[in-house]
Length: 277
Ligand code: C2E
Ligand code: MG
Ligand code: MG
Ligand code: MG
Image (cartoon, rainbow, N blue to C red):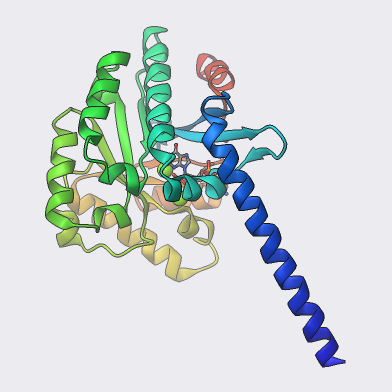
């Protein structure tokens, strides 16, 4: 009986694997056409200053409306796009789209906000990244201080002197730089001190467990005090309830982002929210 079960289990497992591989192949094929077919959009999620309650920034989050599969999560297709190189044209498209949008909001007289755009490792390693960012700022006429590029710790760890030089080149354009998903990789205070960064974003996995897990609460407190030492802002991601917010406020976290304030929304939806505020 156990053997029987084992065999069934094995068969189920391989079927599952095959399905996953088939889905992957399908996504990969679709991804190559997604840009041309206008299937990509950008959603925006507000970032709130915890001392004033004002919206100080937005994060641009990519969405893919697959013709048959419906909305595909970036968690499923961004890694694929990184592997097959499509993240380069897609990433540039997001950057441009987000800058155009922020410039439109500025021109419409909304309170000025930073626009945060996620940069994948592959984009960061691209030789002409600085030129691309510079060109997009020029084309869209967005003042550079309203653009914020989010890179992950893993990108920052890649090749220290090369990374520092590149970050300085980006900073010299006048933009902001944040470290995303902070706390999930390895970084020391002395290491971070060498990076010209403006903010640390606390990974949402810590925020999710802050009320149940004292280790996560400690990690958050440590990240906030690291940020204070580095004289950079600290943004908590994935804030979903008041208890989490209270903890973050007590620890003097400067900014927060999460469903408690707003889910990511398309530009029009967000615009009506901004006008109401
Ligand atoms: P991320 O940059 O860490 O983005 C934050 C993610 O947390 C987003 O997921 C957002 O929708 C989600 N989130 C925000 N608030 C909450 C909350 O209160 N609760 C929960 N459970 N989740 C919350 P999303 O949009 O699915 O994006 C996932 C990841 O995909 C992003 O993580 C980022 O790494 C990547 N990504 C998204 N857009 C882009 C892009 O344009 N370029 C690149 N390279 N990566 C992107
Ligand atoms: Mg991000
Ligand atoms: Mg993050
Ligand atoms: Mg993430």
